[in-house]
Image 1 (cartoon, rainbow, N blue to C red):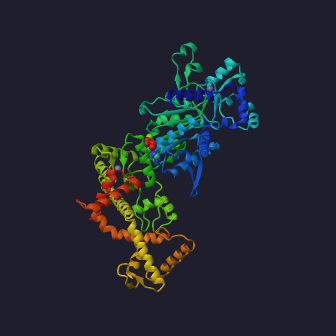
Image 2: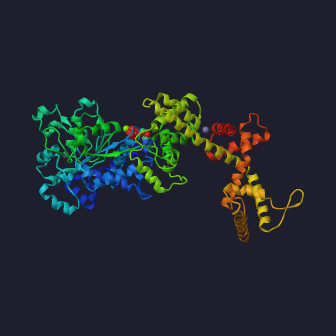
Length: 631
Ligand SMILES: Nc1ncnc2c1ncn2[C@@H]1O[C@H](COP(=O)(O)OP(=O)(O)O)[C@@H](O)[C@H]1O
Ligand SMILES: [Mg+2]
Ligand SMILES: [Zn+2]
Ligand SMILES: [Zn+2]
């Protein structure tokens, strides 16, 4: 790739997007594409909707978030429906601050960032385009130039709504430079950019106690005040507060409730009617999405203070809990690992899953439902079928604790533990046991864990380990069965010969001695029992197999190992059972004989080729499973 050329291309693309004209020309654009004059809330909503919406089980999934945010579909649905969609329809919620409230490292900043970066991009597309008065410190909507008296007519003519008034700076400019000839005022396309402080801003409280409201609303410009003589001359004021700069887009307000009460009061009265006050000027119109975030403790302290009641009504709170699905949690870890410099290490299959099980268990609340336990609940939440429970039970579980997911272990903590384990072990590969051990060691150092919690968490690690053990055993047995494929075929043939004789009331011939024998009932039953076929049902099952075989024969197809799903399962299970001892011996022996060595190599190769293991973790798995089977 020619990097310089790519940079040039990028620059020329940005150049191409630029547009400059007069207000009169802008009106023609609005006539053709009224959406250029939509509000910031509406633009954010359309950005999300344009990325695509899927219906899943009566819930909406917004693809806009799906590559970055995992397991928070319900939260995102509320965010989009209850906040952005309503706000886009100009309902009252858009005049309130959106407050994301949730536990540390639960994805709040990631969510806001996604919206900010998304809107920067969207403003560069046709559907997301917007325009502003050239030179306005707030890149304000040019339609503010339309006098109030004429707005009803103009709105009807153009099919748009006009809200807000010229900012003090533009008002003066239009008066002095254009003598109120609004049609001549220059307009330009606005390309949102946080770096350039255009329409996207971040406010993070510096010193909460002495926070200056000017950081939000701008301040007097002492370098020009002598020239203009008065603090109320807009030319002697810098409209460069975060609220000014984020006009038309999004302002992120980090850790909002860390701010002093007085400051919040100021802020909230500023934002309440889509206006804010700065210096000695009339109200300034603002069209921006304000998204704040905070943690639960601060939020609780905030609402428990009676004095804050009025403030609360100006805030829309959206709880952002931790993800509660194991499979989604794994995706979060994968993402975090990709983003870190752990990219080169091999993560053994199921290692992240083991950690995810632990994390999710720390976040779940014990249900009072009959027959329910945390592991079952965890499975149900992850969309697995659990015997004795239905979909409606899952819904009930969710409703049992509306605040579930507001505490527990956070994803970043898990990743930190994994990386410290890696450093300590100095290895190229890390497996589930390493991960669980690292998490266990970490419990002693975790700053905010009580003694009881520690006990509870140790138990969760044990549960995660048990889940992993089952999987590990199954995986090894499967790999063994594969290398015993010949045995599976022989077993099948053997079974079919016997079934045929049974159904036809004939005898079978012993392949060695040529002797005639009755069908081997014991063999047939030992296979059928694997899939729960009772003594009473065996005849029907065998006849069904015979019918299947003759159907195949008529069509000229060969009946084989894969031709009958349940029979195959039965054969595999029988093999598992027969092989158990072989696996046990082969995997745990210190000095394998030639034959055993061959099997081990075959199985290892299969684990590597088909199941994502590397030589290190494949061998570790075999040894581990060997020790499990020998217990
Ligand atoms: N549900 C989630 N989906 C995707 N990533 C997540 C999720 N929860 C946390 N993360 C990741 O964990 C890290 C910490 O999240 P962050 O957004 O900083 O949390 P917060 O701002 O709530 O403290 C980020 O890298 C984030 O991408
Ligand atoms: Mg954050
Ligand atoms: Zn202006
Ligand atoms: Zn490995």
